[in-house]
Length: 204
Ligand SMILES: Cc1cc2nc3c(=O)[nH]c(=O)nc-3n(C[C@H](O)[C@H](O)[C@H](O)COP(=O)(O)OP(=O)(O)OC[C@H]3O[C@@H](n4cnc5c(N)ncnc54)[C@H](O)[C@@H]3O)c2cc1C
Image 1 (tube, rainbow, N blue to C red):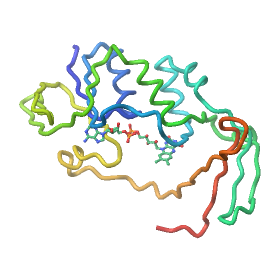
Image 2: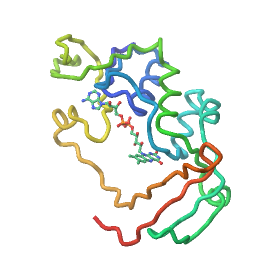
Image 3: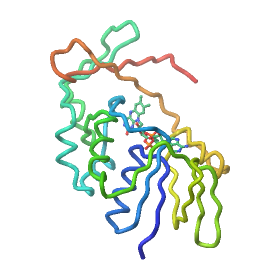
Image 4: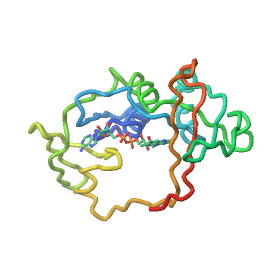
């Protein structure tokens, strides 16, 4: 049965859900608090599950076209002393393949795929949600209303709607150290190499 689905938050997660659900024939509306989408963003490395989803969406070729090839990775101390210098090929030899793409580049592929098929409304947030049986009534920040069969909240890490309506949800601590990458701006290629800094004394 076709459902009326509202997705609040049009980031990578929200747009991926919108494509999958609209392909299944559901009527999908995406809202975002931003006034437009931006192509800005850091580099992300898309791995197994992410790559499989893009294949499922039929977007593998576009993903390949928008990805960056990388030559090598240098692991550095804070004083830039090289710990390890590896070719990217070597680094990926014994682990699952990964694809380097900017967050904005990945988001743009998804957005391009659903523009015109899915209703995307900017400058809009959820003001109130009330459930009546199997239906959910949503009131938006501009005063308009919608009746939905399913509401998906994909507003990212600092979701105000999740905090307000899913008070028992918890953030999972993966207990990992984050490695920050810095691009070498003076490189002659768009993104030919990047450095990974390791701060071994880091603690939280
Ligand atoms: C520096 C950095 C590096 C990273 N590297 C990697 C990596 O290598 N590999 C990887 O897989 N992941 C990486 N990540 C994580 C990855 O980028 C995020 O997990 C991903 O972007 C999250 O997508 P999302 O759609 O869940 O949320 P977001 O991208 O945060 O999107 C949320 C959307 O919801 C909208 N929104 C927010 N609040 C509201 C509201 N109240 N109402 C309506 N709309 C709202 C926002 O405007 C936004 O469009 C990295 C993250 C950072 C910060």
